[in-house]
Image (cartoon, rainbow, N blue to C red; front, side, top):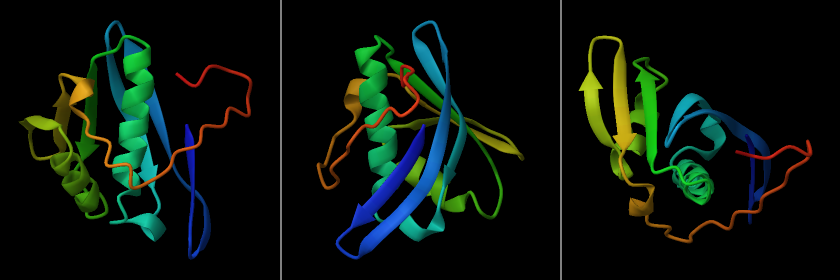
Length: 124
């Protein structure tokens, strides 16, 4: 999924993408890229929350993410820690996060989400 963002200050354009692998009743975020242009504006939270809602509609209850520790990934660790993810494992290279119940997301409704499907395929 690609994400685009605009606010009262202008159009940020394409600000990120997320790839998700679905296995049985759980999903794993395999790729997540977010532009620094929108960092700390709660857009990251809204992206993950929106994906969570789509997964719930598919009957999926668990969402996992594996973050590789890098200098650039530090802000994402903060994002995952601030959401209902729990840290399930950490080593020198990776941090594994998981949500056991996607209904735990609280939509702050600070951001309005519009879905567009330009490829005529199911989004999830």
